[in-house]
Length: 285
Image (cartoon, rainbow, N blue to C red):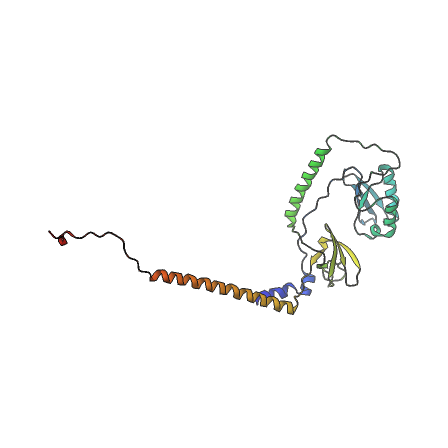
């Protein structure tokens, strides 16, 4: 009975919508690219009180930042600034960004494609307008080793502090997705569960009830607990009862055999085999 009550509480739909988020997943440090300016990350910070926003472009290899202050951030303004940056450093192989509207727009994607830039590493040489010379450093191996050690140290510290644990999500699982807090009584998670269709590291592709695809980070989802089907629950209980009865019968049979062995051992008379010495007064002179 207690197990059934716990199961019902755990699968309560309204409770899951307002419950706290699960523990974050362990960090996945980004591996150092093979060369400078091959893999970049771009993000927007703001808006600030002045109404301006800051666009930051960072090289994963050297950590070199390029910063631009814009009064308006659109899918047209960002490529214009990127082109001026690439005129100096060359075109990268990959640019990593979030799901902001100006980054996922068709115009922005088409612009990157026309420049030969993709969201996946393709190991192509850096494309430049003019021939460039790649300087080879003798301590590159040591630099990579130090980079991995620092990242691993940071990962262990951060995972321990955040109490991170794997979510063990699989394709086909139903999950709840966080939603923006628009009203006072808006729940933390969207009331309609979604189904996982693809998993790529911490990036998860979801499908809602209308068939629309959504891309979210694993930190924004949690496994949805469904109420078991009554028929399946009955079958599971019957199976559990049969297993319990079988274990009890085996235990009783073992106990009976043990008791019989003990009784037989007690019935057997124990004769002393000690040599007895006859008293002297009974000896015939």
